[in-house]
Image: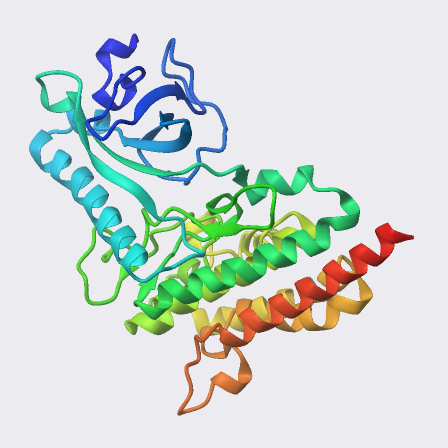
Length: 366
């Protein structure tokens, strides 16, 4: 199928926006046929087409919303409304983040809509972001092995700050994973990206009724087993804590917490959501999950340097505990505390990153 048959989001090359941005090249897809590749696209994102835009010598990342799926729907207008509503909700969240000076969250430089023809599908809502070097899933492979620990600990520190900033406005990210943490510039500058699957307490959004709006490959175990807590903080903020802790497993071993947990369960123990046959409730599943989690922590210890493993294993244990009521720092899990506060983890990752940076400088000076 030629690009002329696709929605307007696929036909923006060479377009100059009213604000002066010119769309100059595709990112992660072939302009000859619209075929996508597994390629970093700058902010993650769903149902979008990625480009590089230029203005006054500055390059930026543009995410255009693809309306193609709406064109094939039984109710086209309803489908268009759902897609554009999701885009508008993300744009509103980004405005909240910008107004809150969230320096560890990727915010939009501009949002709007451009049309390349007279038909409904020719319209392309878009968001423009500062151009990143890449996401940490891929960038870590290019980091010198000697400096890798300091690098990813700083990434953990900045990510914890970003999630804490979102939580301060009752925004739950819900899709935190290595591909949604971006690295900027040659210095250590990491920011949380892609609020397209987020939910915001008190603000109606397109994903409010979903069991889980993020990538199910990273979902907390209680979600996989169908345990849905009606309380916003326990369900949504607690989920973000789990996703943050899962990144410790990823950086240390190459695999997230959920991936490792599921490999330890046989078919009879896995939930129906991941092709298992377990039909008991989550409380019944917890003992076997805790046993697997204990084994995972023991293996994690072997993947971490001695001076760091005790504190990092403790953090991973607290953030990713399969029992949501035990998630978070013990000193915050008190009646008068905020169980889902990340303040102590922000400090911890900062301290460990500085320690690793000092050791790296000492080693390279020899």
